[in-house]
Image (cartoon, rainbow, N blue to C red; front, top):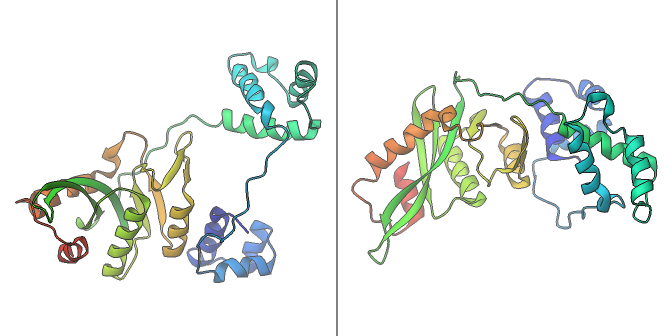
Amino acid sequence: MLSMDDIKYIKRLYESEGISIREIMRRTGYHYETVKKYLDMEDFNEPLHPPKDSTSLLDPLKPVIDQWLLDDLKAPRKQRHTAKRVFERLQAEYPQMLEVKLRTVQYYVSQKKKELFQSQQKAYLPLYHPPGEAQIDFGHFSYINNSGEMTDALKLTMSFPFSNHSYCQIFGGENQQCLLQGMRNIFEYMGKVPYRIVFDNLSSAVAHMGKGHHRVLTEGFKRFMAHYKFEAAFCNGAAGWEKGNVENKVGYERRNMFVPVPTILDFSQFNQELF
């Protein structure tokens, strides 16, 4: 099975850019049956029995190699480890642990060097917001529960900078289920989906923040993106001003829709009233 990133790329070429299946085959190298299969796919749920991650005989030595390559960043360019030199040092210093051939070491060193020497330039989001673009953020609020006690909860706000409009939904937490359900509620109420949505680096969508503006997304979030066919963009770390419209809307809604402190007995019913 192709990765969600590959599937998303194929569907974007066909559905958003109007590229023919034959041209997609040429660009990706996949057969017609493979391309057609993923273009027709509508269900992006995980398989019942996902394959387990395979291990490598090189795994015990990877921390050693990583440290050598990391130290190389401080060394002159012509005095850094080649893959062959790494292999020779492993043979000399860790003969009992080395159970792989030169080819395996070459592949790992190549991948690790790409990661270490990746561009350090910081990416920024443009401040121009065209029609069809949205921003999303969570905000805290308080309410009175069934027992008459003051309780904290979270409000998911989706704003549209071009029209300065917004919707919000409330939840008891900030996990992935709350994020995706809130977005789904808003999509279904509007009867349409923004083509691009700007997020901060919330853990329910971003599994890992890479260098620059690279993000490793959670599988559940990628499946949700593929189903609703929108593009996701993420702010730089500690740069909330990049989605200033929704930041303002979170406060505006709290001041105008949650004052005085509301009594909420049923979240689902209250969410319908918010619409």
